[in-house]
Amino acid sequence: VQLRSEFMARVVLLMLLLALGVGAHAQTPVIRVEPDTSYVQRDTFVTVMVRCDDNLTGVKGLHFDIDINAAGVVIAPASDESDTTVTLGSLFVEDDTMTFLWDYFWTDSTRLTVDIFVLGENRTVSGPGDLLAIRLNTIAFGESDLVISGIKLRDSENHDVLATVENAWIKVCQFVGDANADNRILVNDLTYMVNFLFRGGPAPTPYAAGDLDCSGQVNISDVTAMVRYLFQGGLIECGLCL
Image 1 (cartoon, one colour):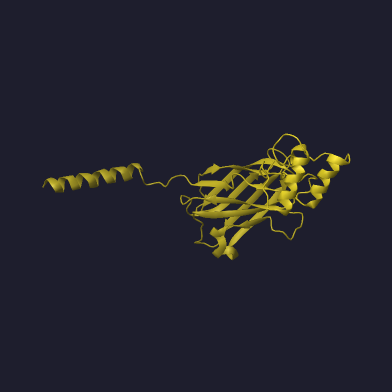
Image 2 (tube, one colour):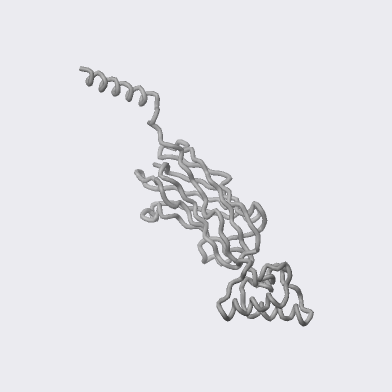
């Protein structure tokens, strides 16, 4: 009798919790931008991912406003139109023909706007996984926040779906040793440093790009370090990224 009473009490408690909605609602989904930090040289492409966790369920429509150059002019869409700037993530791979994608890069405000709508009466998207892959062409050295400044999610009944966003940032760096700032470390940089030290040529741009041994000065020791790096597998003591 006692066991039966305890069982009934637990059943009643569970029914009360469900009636109050405790445990009945899923947690708020998290949508995040990755990577949080990325070091690349300019004139190359970098891919930024927009991902969601497993709390995102049954979403029909998605709208994103992503501000990319909040801290300076760092990246821009590919100059060649044949390069895809935005593609659907892995969550949509099987439904590519059933998904609407529209994107626009606001060049005056450095904002990327993306709209996604899952077509088909019984089709929705749920996490975890990738929602977007954004391929960007770096055009200058510097760093920028990657901010989801506007987001709207709708379910199949056109109701709002709340979500938490996690933003990120990216750094586009010049390599130590890239004395002539042409985005590569080559023999040309060695020649550039020799011209600076012995022939009155221009200083490395910036000066720290020629300081391979972290001494605070650009001198013959840095030329030696450059030779070791280029021809003998040596390391740059200051690390590669300014």
